[in-house]
Image 1: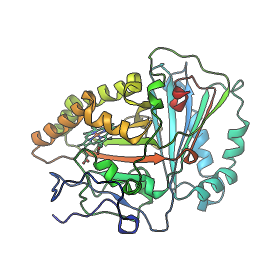
Image 2: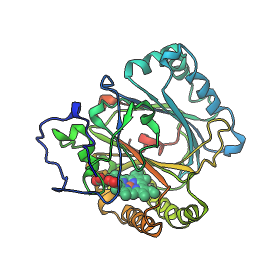
Image 3: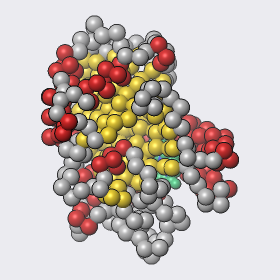
Length: 360
Ligand code: HEM
């Protein structure tokens, strides 16, 4: 099989940081990376969320439609390229529902925020008057600080809706350190962070909402991962195997990061159900883990050394073996490593363990 680098030619440069790619490496199964147009210099990923401490998902129908209406307001050229609804009940028992949206550039996002009326609405929110919490988390990675990995060359997820192409099979995967090797910035930057994840609040139990607006400053080289699973294309045999054997170990890993993530430098982890775009209900057979780590080394450390990801990883290899390689489960992830000014976090009337508030 001919392999190519996950880093496209126009982003390759002489390394001052070593790669972990083994010599003459031949990965045991193929994986692919999204290829973005050369003129894409930065990407914008925005999570707009509503938090309900004391309401059931089924009784709450207005928050997401309210956000979705903004997405199609203002000139069409500024609308997001892709958006997806998702939800999670967190470890305080609060129901969080979000729209994750993607734009091609910071300028396009800013134009949308102004012309759609979203920015004015957001700034006008009164945490005391609102019936529930709202949160806004924005990432502006330059393309050098962003990487994607797909188990399938047909799949499109997240920022990959903005791709022009998908790579051929890539070299940099299934060895520890391959995520770093796929990030163009890692050719010349070791990407050290802050070690502040250890101080974040991961305890379980109810937490009362703070009736105020809180902005959280960006962290040096914050590492963000959105790691998705799609079992909607599996046949009944594989679906059962997934739900009986993979899904439970994945939940254990996500619960660990959510409840004790401070032990491994994780500020926040949400294991989210993707909702149907029309009905805004669950049942899509798609989930993703969405986690913020204090740096890439902490994320690498959890995935390589912690029992909970080793169990996920090991179970997957066994799963593929049991299916004799005929796997229809689709996996993808996108990883961002961000400079402080490439992050924006604001929480209006949310409880203190929400997202990056957990690190304050
Ligand atoms: C790497 C399996 C969920 C974090 C990997 C790899 C596999 C794997 C096979 C090696 C990938 C490659 O390079 O080709 C799985 C499966 C999952 C899952 C089957 C779910 C069913 C997650 C989640 C997270 C995560 C939810 C984080 C929130 C990572 C990281 C790496 C990795 C950071 C890269 C390690 C490195 O390259 O140094 N996982 N994983 N995984 N996984 Fe998972």
